[in-house]
Image (cartoon, rainbow, N blue to C red; front, top):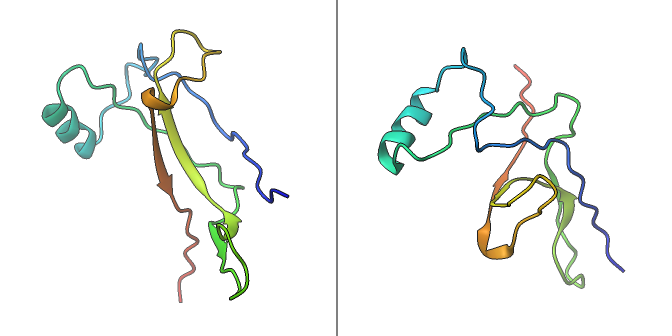
Length: 104
């Protein structure tokens, strides 16, 4: 039995760039492009406001396997077309956490 489900909440083409001409790079993006090379493809995305916060349920002493919860990943891959989902060797995945802030 598998208690996980993968949902895609956003998908965008990064290269060739579809960036709007009026969009400016953030200071961090400028530093990374300078460090990586001019061939790097900076991009931004907006996290959906209605997406639930990251949560992890810790397993009990007798439970085995990965903890259950809500996890988010930004996944980038190289493909020859929009339908191409890439190969494992051409995929980079970055885990991110959505936190909720409530002022005291």
